[in-house]
Amino acid sequence: MQAMILENSAMPLSERTVPRPEPGAVQILVQVCACAVCRTDLQIIEGDPQHPKLPLILGHEVVGKIVAVGKGAERFKPGARVGVPWLGWTCGDCRYCRSGRENLCEKAKFTGYTLDGGYAEFMVADERFCFSIPDNYSDAHAAPLLCAGLIGYRSLVKAGDAERLGIYGFGAAAHIVCQIAKHQGRKVFAFTRPGDDKAQKFALSLGAVWAGDSRTQPPEQLDAAIIFASDGELVPQALRAVAPGGTVVCGGIHMSDIPSFPYDILWRERTVCSVANLTRRDGEEFMKVASDFPIQTAVQTFPLQDANEALDDLRTGKMQGAAVLLMP
Ligand SMILES: [Zn+2]
Ligand SMILES: [Zn+2]
Image 1 (cartoon, rainbow, N blue to C red):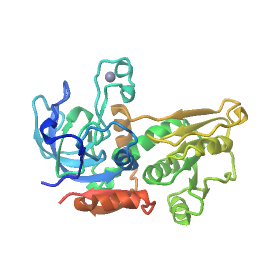
Image 2: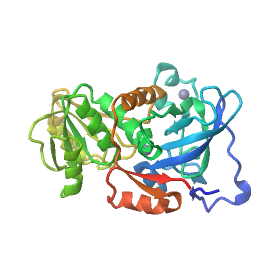
Image 3: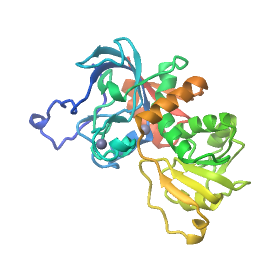
């Protein structure tokens, strides 16, 4: 059986234990068909965020088939196709869980970070956190929906009803959000790394009305901007591009320090906020959108054993759309 495992060489084998199910988890055994590669996977390998379980199997954008169900499982039958997202378990009991904000649960466990994920042929998941995948997507095309799509969707909701929407960093999440935003009748302005003509053309091909360098100002003032890139310098850039009352949403799990900026660019009720994780409700809502409107996910597939190559291509910015690992 194949899996890509991040090791902790400092931990002697004798101290490693088989992970126990989280309290209340309703387990299913999933044969992984496809798992998309997320920038967060790279950041986990590079040590930020800092506390992954080790050894760890990465991967939190998983599409697979259920091969067996554990005690109490009743949502899905063996053979059903499911998606396993980043949010893998929550306590159900804290003030966040009880107020519809399970994305902020302090005890939450995350797939491919504090729970083993989908860079593997098989994985165990908690069925309560899995989603049905709309039939109109292949396994490979559905995989990026599970994080790029979901986090992108939550970021888009945070942007409110902005008609003119800026997107900074045109990778996997942006290419999905751009299509949904256009479908909703918004105007998308895409910002890429300076000189990245390929990404700018890609954005225009997906319906953006304008594409340009992240250091330049768009031709119109924006009502909101979403930043998917991890460069903190983009926050003041985006604040300068949004109109009074506008929102800047930081959609990434990691960002470099935000430089100080004059109050002037925040004043007049501009807002800066971040998006953390997802709730199951986001997932259900987003899968409904994805089933009503066919999102064209651009994917580049790699066999599981080439996971490192896929990660390298993402690191060096070679990837357009999303990298997806296909299992043997
Ligand atoms: Zn992700
Ligand atoms: Zn909780």
